[in-house]
Amino acid sequence: MGKKIMLHPLTVRYSVFMLGLAVMGYGIGMMIEANLGVAPWDTLHIGLQKTFGLTIGIWSQIVGVIIILSSYIIGKIRPNVGMFLNMFFFGLFIDLFMWLKWIPTGGTIIERVFLFVAGLLIYTFGTGMYISPRVGAGPRDSFMLALNERMGWGIGKVRIGIECTVTLLGFLFGGPVSAGTLVTALTIGPLIKQFIPMWERMMAKPYGKVPKEQFID
Image 1: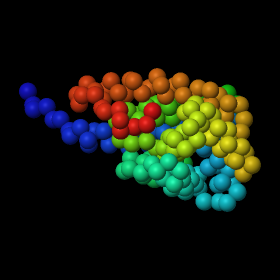
Image 2: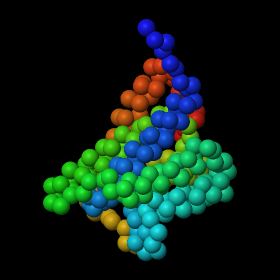
Image 3: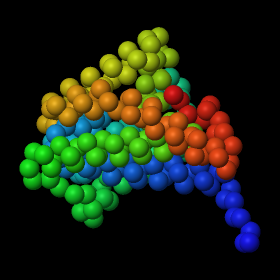
Image 4: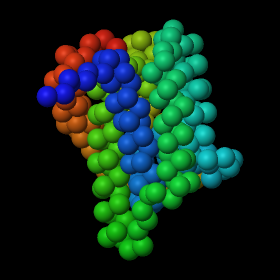
């Protein structure tokens, strides 16, 4: 029998983290192509793209930089490697998949609904992958924590306030707000909570439990 090869745990964690970002980017691309509504932050990115040009991915990166700086100013949250990787590669993957035309499109309303649902599942599946290695929180999660620290509000209230504000801004800039936006807002959290434990169990089998302090829940 051949000798079993074990990769370094840190290599595996960062690989799963990066693959999760790619899967998330593909899922968001599918939801964009379905044109039935996307998550609040993506509504803002699309609105900025429609108003000022550039690409959705680049606006995701620009907004990410602004959020990282805001989190440090408001809550003194220092950015880490995972935060910068999230900010840069998530936007890059969205643009790459759409530029390569690897994302299917739908002509009829039934095809678009199927595309939206599939995209939502793929996006949340990828989010579970990105979170499970506990490499670091994304910029938007850190911003939520910064406001929680400064304002003293509960995480739930802060999240709702941020997402409502972002959705309104996205709408004012021409971003898509429709039934899919509401569906995303109501289902994205529960779906991600289903996928995170699955990926954590898969990560724990060969490498042991990943320390939770490296990600903000």
